[in-house]
Image 1: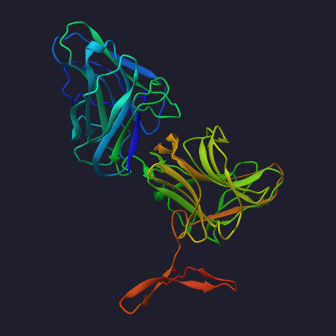
Image 2 (image 1 turned 120 degrees about the horizontal axis):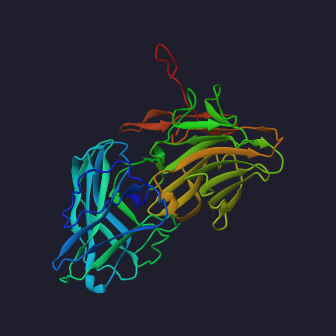
Image 3 (image 1 turned 90 degrees about the vertical axis):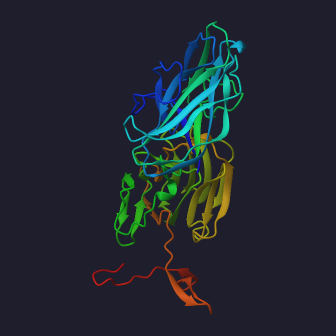
Length: 430
């Protein structure tokens, strides 16, 4: 899946001593974090050249967070950055060199893109420009390694007149910079690798917990959230403490090309006036999130896409059905985000979809189950189970050719339902 980084003015976690590209002038000291979300005020760096021959000038370097796991970084790289030149006669085009460090050392693990030189001149009025996708050389990345991106320009003029090339970085606008866009002071520039394969943040699908022996280490929880040992579930009350069960990670999670689902076994009951229980996915506590919210007031299920805590359009609202809506899922695929429900985690119904907003492409997302009810409310808690896992027990049945897996179902007095069974392992039931 594609992994997008943003050029920020934040302090680089590690800056290698050696500039690796072929630069005529590599004196720039600009270095920043190649972050998994936009950050910082819009900033620019400019460097002048006076050579009467073709010259390559480094503008800055950006270094990624450490890789969270080993894997092969391959495919293509695309980028859009804000840039400008002081005069059209400067004839400046982008110059880029990208590589991977062996951890926090000056040793190169492998070169991804060697001294790339563009063909489109910088504009004289600052605007976005870059590539739609350029092949990179595969590098076998190890946990702890970092990507280093060196950006600059090649001045192809033959004049000794001093000309300056400028690169813009930083900014935290709600829209990424695109080619030709002049909003370089707000819309952030970025670099995207097509085949990073969750090397630099975990897909939300990695958050797996059946709550069989407690609440796992992937979660933190508060406000009365607890583990129900008898039912092997997490219980989340609805009260005025905003109780929650949150999955977080040092490097964060990402939903791009991934999914996140859970079984909502029981919704809370009781409460007065405002009350809800919800599955939420977002980058921070800033009111920007997607949410599937159950309203205690109206017994409805609400599918939301919020910025500033307000839906950006009209939310989808359904009358809650404890059977049809037992499972809920967020899913992202090919630039579209989906809110979905299922009775069995096998057959899913899309309840809402939208073009994936920029902030859902971040690699530092966190997801949580939360509840709320007005002060003084007396509610029964919600019960959550089977996060990103389907508790299907199967038996094998001879179909005339081979033993085929079949779901084990039990009659509950009303319908046939999938049930788990346990086996004795000499010391315990599992």
